[in-house]
Length: 225
Image 1 (cartoon, rainbow, N blue to C red):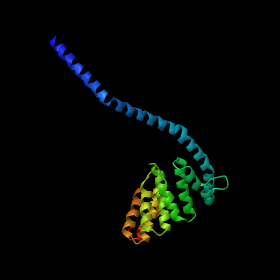
Image 2: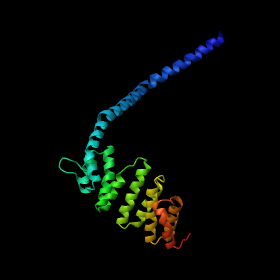
Image 3: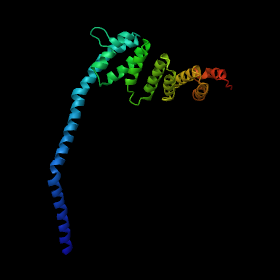
Image 4: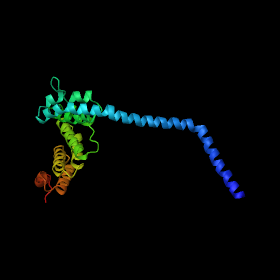
């Protein structure tokens, strides 16, 4: 009987402590939970009633600019025409949307085609590939092209090397950018680096277009089969 009484006393102590804790902190906990519920609800409402319509409008706006881009009308793709926004307007008006992010990539390549290389670099750097390595590989290659056009060979080589190693599943693209990195290294007098890159290309992508001709470039630097 005494054991049961002791156990009952212990149980009551636990209850008393819990009640005391709730009396001391209950309002704060309720407030915190309320804030969390409001935050979750606000995030849901933002996604469904604000962000989704913004994305839809941005996707609609970018359609015409993409058509100009596919037709190599890069100035029209960038600036649009009356009533039809180009990539620059989409970036400005629909900031924070996926379409605006994609417009940075299009704008970067368009400026590259038009010979405005620093603007190309600015937009390519503003683009977020979101861990898509194949797309990031393309971006790095375009950055390499832009820096090479500005005679910033070290930066160009660095980006070409990244482009050549980010997504090895695409052998044609990877071998092309490794080749550009090697060739630009050779042109910059960095023969050891060029040999290393040519050899990497030969070892990893022997059956690609650049893989078939790489021995000629290695031989030019004194490396024979």
